[in-house]
Image 1 (cartoon, rainbow, N blue to C red):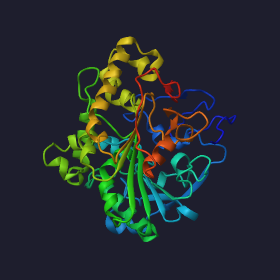
Image 2: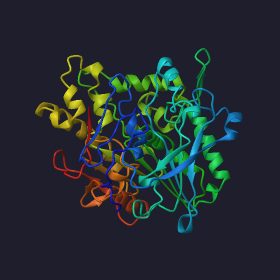
Image 3: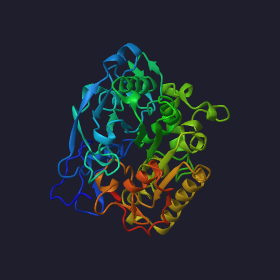
Length: 419
């Protein structure tokens, strides 16, 4: 495994927060006025880069404009591709970038002036670490595959199709997904012998939404699976007995025209907003799917369970930032969240082809960060790191249904603590 004890503090790519690379915890400055409090973690490979991260350039999809497959502001979408070689030359990982959502005109207008809504603001190069690393030491099963990160600039998990003319907003996530896939197929992915669709956070939700579509791009002879990291957003009641996340997702679905692109196996019997929640989708996905999630997901604690809007007296403020400051009753409440997560994946977990890694950490996104994917001190369940668990499942070396004991039993976690 790679040695991550390097003596510097990495400047992050989002909102200027920073990470203490020596600590068991990662500390971040928190802007509580934003809905997506953990957007920084959704490009989480920037948190701990390793010694010499591979930097991969941005490719804009020139054919996308004619298809109306554009970012919120009408600019071209793009991706970063690092070619595979040797035994991985005909194997592909397609990674869908995460980064929250926009649920109303105001938030989408703001978003279109950032890299989350316009390729004009996207980095020209980004680091590939974790599951995207080209190092056999850091990414033993996928290092020599063709590895692609599709940039996220629509705000609805690559699933909307609509527009708001007055605000000059294009909601074209579904078209971006299709244009990117068509472009990648044209440059060699159609010859893939093995393929894996992955994504973190909003990209993890997108992976669930598009998993069976992804399978459909390839012949039956191609081995195709999907990995959703931190994408298991639950339809939960918040600490004020309200429905913060349901109301938020309802705004995303309604504004961006997501309904028409949701799986009919769900919309045939549930409302569109319910069908944006993975718990109502995962049991009907036909393609093998691996769910990687923390049982105490930091984003969901801060934005779904105990957002400041549901906590006007600030009772949850310290707990929201640092789990070590939670009271016994707050931990009890969070154990209920874990129990709901385990109940919601019960049917899914019964399928032999599916995989699970649910660790009892206060974190968000673990597959694209080197320190949590595969390192000397990375999180484990039963002495198995995430990278090895995913590899064993993908290559059918073992059945992987790893569920951690409840907090605080796991001392291998890389908890996130906010300032």
